[in-house]
Image (tube, rainbow, N blue to C red; front, side, top):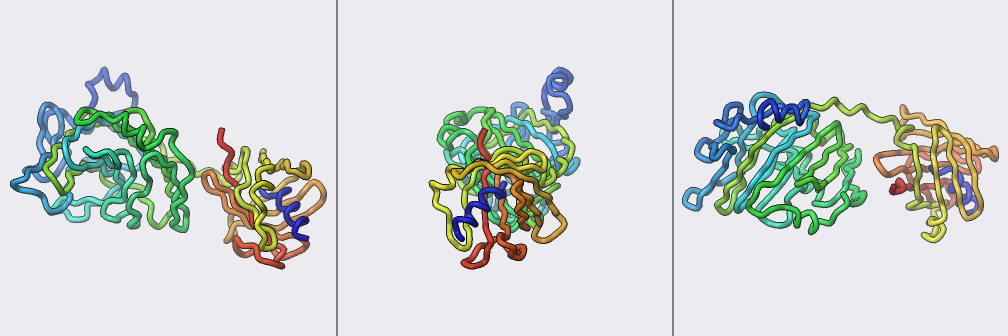
Length: 360
């Protein structure tokens, strides 16, 4: 019976730049800093100034700050955008806040998404939840990580951005100018330093994610530090249209886990499963031969439901969840009722399958 359930599960689990010249080189971008003064920005005048054509934040050992403080861009909030700038830091830690919130106006304290950077060798490029404004999630993505925050608040590390943390650090110039790019479109957030992607984050937690807010530059508590910013420019992006579940399912998948009647399918058996989805058709190759069929999705139910029709005539009711590079389904075999949760127990005639998108 377990072998039959495994067989059935395999068959259906699919499943400011330089004026006009710069504008011409970067269509759609506008400068946020005039290169002369802090017009359009607000912060502690004792700490922030313009030196050598760059916004400069500076602290001293004789008068240390007691809380993190920020220079806030006041002209308008940011939502979907691409931000480009150059930074230089000597000592300490800093960051670029976006889609953020002014928490204490008198102290220019800001919290929310932060594109971090530092004089050290660990945190430059990470995504950090400053002040807990994005749900108290701390380091939301370490350097070099591709991360999905699920709808129920879990952190799922999907893979890497292509280079290790050490490789990314090696490309950052110490006490010299570096180029930082932040792209925020819908729930997709990407940081780059000197052309290298440092984090790639999809935030699916609707209760905690941030969609709009202020842009700000940070001075951090701690030892004396100097941080500078120049060539700050931004381009508004169209809001990312949400992709349908059917769109997200298209392509090739590999089995990461299958549990049938409470029994976990061994890894060596999973290795032979190949799944391809095209339109509403699925094609599966397994050690026991190929199979194919069609499926229908219903995203209005909770959990979302799916009805699978195998070419052999087998009809299987199921529930499903798809997000980013992960596809999860739990379905009923042998006439059992549609599952109500993603779980397979002994005697349930339910099969749980988790797939990961096949890497290019």
